[in-house]
Length: 195
Image (cartoon, rainbow, N blue to C red; front, side, top):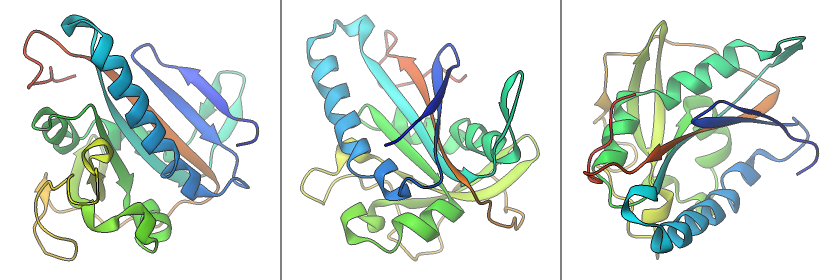
């Protein structure tokens, strides 16, 4: 994938992918491989060591300085990752991985390719701090033969999950972003702690 930039964020990681790398690589095959690796790990891990992940993908401008990286695209990605709807959907899923894609990323990358199974994504309203937008959630490890991963209304329906009506925002351009948050399964694996 070329030269990736990454930062360890304690319980998560930020990965920046150069703009020249095709964005579809962040969806397939990466998510399938990640879901498979999580499943293999969780099969042999003890109950207290199992891992569940929330992942977010977005694209936008990134600025580098002496402290690392910054930019609205990074803020947006982490706010998508913090969305209550994403936490709730993963909490209600038997799987170990939930993906949230920004509206721009869904429209420009996911929606137009049947191999990404865009009908398995559901719109959610995201309201975290000053970010109010629509994003799209999927459960990549629940897709199986193309039928699983159902988390609500079919693609194109007006049903949304989550917070209040979003404000319109222009798309961002440049680097692709990915962020993941690690969640260790607690004594009640069916429910995640709100963090």
